[in-house]
Length: 81
Image (cartoon, rainbow, N blue to C red; front, side, top):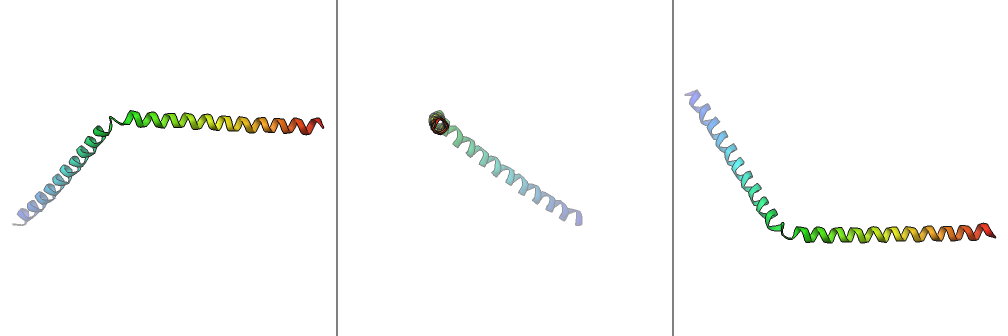
């Protein structure tokens, strides 16, 4: 009788683990489907992100170049007088 109770307990635990595994695989499937549906728009979003990154990089480079030119101009102005 004692072994039968242990076996039922083990079977119940296994059934719970199997149901958890099935629900997590369903969750993964749903997430995968959502990713596949969004995959069509991904290149456009990446393109916009890359373009804004390039624009920001050029803006920062020009900004620092401007600061460097201002510094050189002021430095020349102060050292020549």
